[in-house]
Image: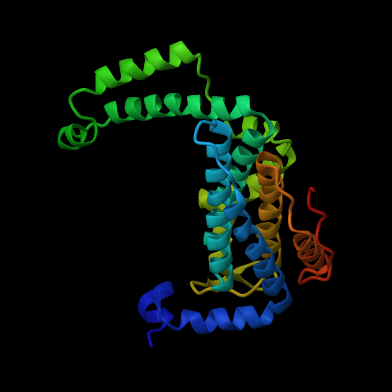
Length: 272
């Protein structure tokens, strides 16, 4: 067995820590895993038309939401809170895209067209690489021709860029963008406030040491958020593919909503 002071979070005894977390948060973990099983099974009922941009993107985005939220749950169980928040932020962004595309097939087409702009922007960034050996490797000799072709396609399709907030508004989740997404983004950018996870404070708020180990504190709301994201994703997928959401999902959702967070305050009501 290897230990954290030897291999960090690659250490084999992290699984022992995960077992302790699952025990400490047993009701939360049980409901989240039960809900996840239902969400995971839903994807196998999709009937996807390869000719439909809406079907293709909604199915792929649903799978992406599952991948991110399931990864987040694995990280949460191992006390890796910052990494879990990063995964949940990725899941929220995929959720915006999913619900926006599900709400209107024209948005799904616009989502596809917007990729041309993103690709053109990437090519323009690569042209700014200063190191000649790297520039030759990543850009190639025909970059100008490729950028011209992309520009022509953008003009012919009248493609427009789609920003994250715009997609959140189209998904009727702008409040999520302003709150949950903004909060989780702090971990993506390693902001000063987010780095406080690695400091130990005394009762007067003064730093008294560094903490570089997984933590089992305050995992409830991260678990709840993973379930909320899957809940909204299932609703969008059900709408797109004409499916009914398994009624047991609502049972598990209500059960996890009824749990209390560590300080004894009730959790917030999720959007339905």
